[in-house]
Length: 278
Image 1 (tube, rainbow, N blue to C red):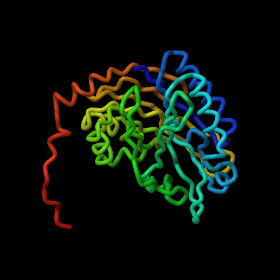
Image 2: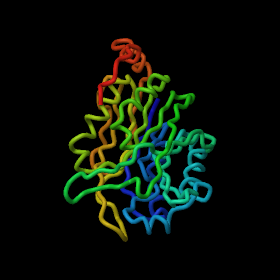
Image 3: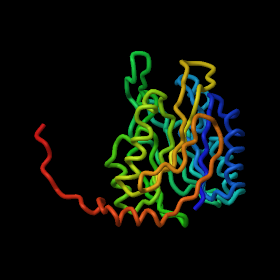
């Protein structure tokens, strides 16, 4: 199975971001990728809720989603749109951070709204309150495809290992973790966390990422770590995309999922235990 991993530097104008994304997807497909993945917030990176309210659309009206669905059909590929920032009908006006798995007919096979919100104080000068602008999802999909069984997550989810164990114990072979990771936490934790999720679950991890300083017309500046990764079930990094934008391809041998799980069958060794007294 040949996978295409797209690393982007999206700005806060969805119309300007779209052709760059499509160009990289086309490069990956031309190189033989049958499954291509883009990062979190493929359509727009913005730190201004007011600006987002102006440029974002509901799912049915989103031009990025429509165009990428058409491109997947034209190229006859499976396409993971890592996520799109979308408007919702929630009374509080919060957006959705939604990942889409598009099949080779251009149809939406699965959706996933990010469950875990990035509400953190990284440093004295860097803080995030994702839940102020985005509402959390409630369910996580595990989808059988002709290529593999795929589990969909997004970015900060990677710090919640029980989510990935549930997916792996449901037969998932590939975990997708599209991200827009902070440079500070990226340098400290990105590789370690993704390798851990691959090792403990005997899964491939595909983590396309945003990278660099993002072109933002309003709101505070935003930078992301890059280093899109593909990790195999034994924890070996098959791809590290570094800091530059681009399209990369890598071949996955899905037999190695069962090989890793037979060597260390930890997914079948869970035992009940008493919880700590709190």
